[in-house]
Image 1 (cartoon, rainbow, N blue to C red):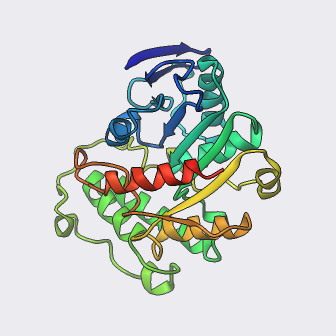
Image 2: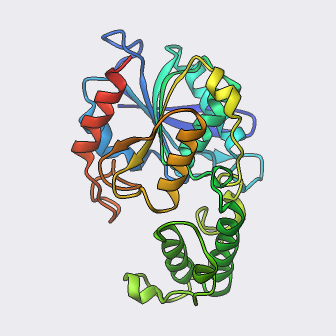
Image 3: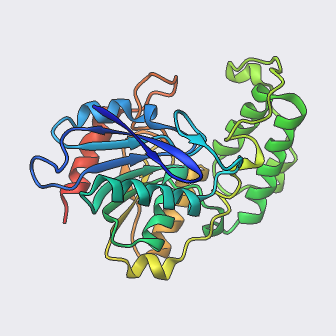
Length: 288
């Protein structure tokens, strides 16, 4: 593995290349991106794709990538330009891409702006409100867990976030009327550390779920887009957004093993089924 720093006017982007460039077998580099997760979240998958050149990176302001613009917000269009710059720096595009969660939203923005950057995009559970019939209620739930975070700190905010993202079906008045959950019930620390800058729980990443995809541009792009949903996620928020987005693109969501973090090992306490996930990803990438 080699670590690289791409110095841009607003950010120094750190990315890792696992394998040779140009690739040894002529297959595209396989880029794996997330948000707000950095490169460390793909450790298990990188090991399972040791026969391919894999590229991971830390989004601006996260992990090792240092912002110089003084900003704190996470915007898919901006991050798409960052990913585009890395692909250009690789000099071996277009790439294949596994993009998960907010990274999948950035990837959709990338394909819209730079349709020749990506050969095959596997967009795993992109959290996009606009494709849902209950988008307004979902955002009200987001405002609620963000307020809990601001009022009571990380543990309380994370408990409220988990409650929202694990709710099955549309967000209803019944859900919105519930009291905030006790973080102890989730095994989450209850003390307030005083910080309010978490990229998942604060407003800094609201542009991700509020992103509105250009469906016609995505349909017209040469990129083969595969919207993926975890088999355990189909009834909850990110599963519903994946299924709804796939329908708008004229396809059925492709079912992958496990849940929203199904590609991860147990390093972060949210173990999925990385081996089964990698096998499914290989199957999808090999279909042309």
